[in-house]
Image 1 (cartoon, rainbow, N blue to C red):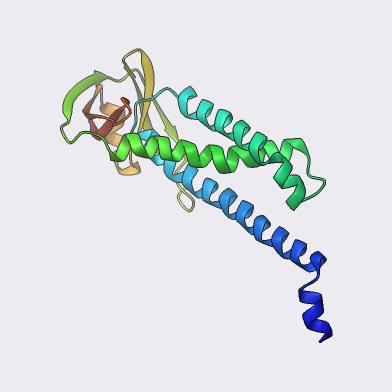
Image 2 (cartoon, one colour; image 1 turned 30 degrees about the vertical axis):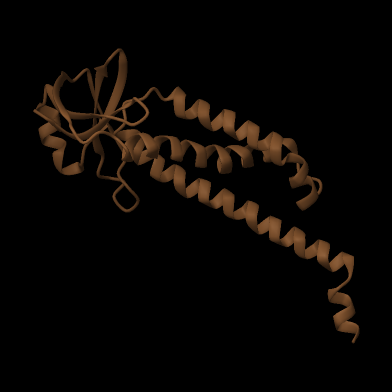
Length: 186
């Protein structure tokens, strides 16, 4: 009888409610982190200035902070403003950025236009985990007044070192930003 009374107490219900919301906010944070990783792959094949997705993350993250700040105080009393801002950007900002980039990418037109651009610069970035010593070649081109990096595979290293131009197939994205459907260097 005593156990049943403890489950109905206001303190227990409050604790359960906080536990639920804590899980919700933690899940939103983790979803945001996972989606930003997928967004990076989409960003690499979308011709868009970096400040647009970055600005979207910051603006939506700040709005998320404003909307959820008082509720986060209820769920986790004593949290500081900086951590709430980071939370807003990493959850709501990253989710919004992914949805924006994915809409442009996945709803792009089917027709692509082949174009050729001269390589402005060549560089390399570290490979993935387990292959850090295998640097991935990167070329930079100018497209409509902005610099775009194209990352190639490690197997293309020799070809990229000799290449002077890149060949792109571009599609018009649903939100107006061009999407690279295929690219190669020659």
